[in-house]
Image (cartoon, rainbow, N blue to C red; front, side, top):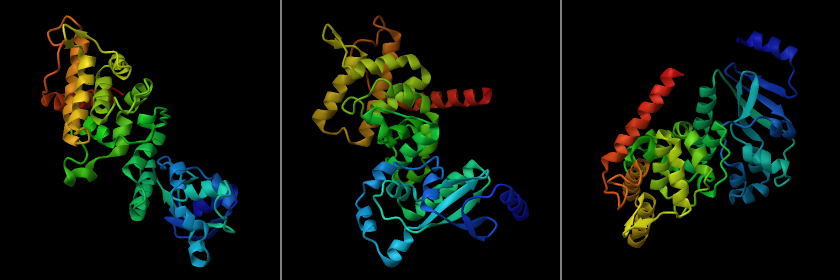
Length: 323
């Protein structure tokens, strides 16, 4: 749509705010604080409640002069005639709650976006410039984008970046530091959205669902949703033994205890190994008590992880081609 067409549309559907300047690809508007609060939030917005609790807002509350003036400048994106906040989400929340002094009006830089991808790129670029978003924020933003309303404490906080990386690539995010930027958190959450909902339904506890087991759960559930029973039993600590040999659930619980004794549970390579062992345990569990591998600790076979990742990728590709 060219500028004259936009002008005609604006005449037919007048907006309540004042356009100060129009540069074609972007424009500058002045609106009331209430109007800014009412704008749609960006689909990938971070956890605004958590951001509102950060210490730097104490300084903002006492800001005067130019420092106070900066608070009224915000950024938005326009897509299909609708405006979305790009930054200023937390200010909107604090203004709405009267926890931050309101300016007389808000000045918004609005960028016209031709697609959802451009709107997402605008958010990513702006956040990179501000260096304000953590990887955990990206995960919770990805939850919102996918419509995930997770309730378990283990998953809802977004502290599953390495688990997502292992499930998506077979390797923890920081094992190869030079490739960290290549990991797309948003794509990983979208890829495992159904599995995250399934795992959330058994209320996984942090003590029994460290990174490696969360990754194994996502991969196992992607291959067979019925595996949820294995992880429910794991969380309920309902493993068993026969003649001193553990069943697959008990074997994973035993492995967790060994990691704690070695105090190496935080080592990311250990979590990759734990994921591989858990996948082997799930495989034995699916075969049943009469199988040769059911009783006893699963032998570490690191290739199990890479092979499972590849199988899940193939399943996703097949599903996408059939859609």
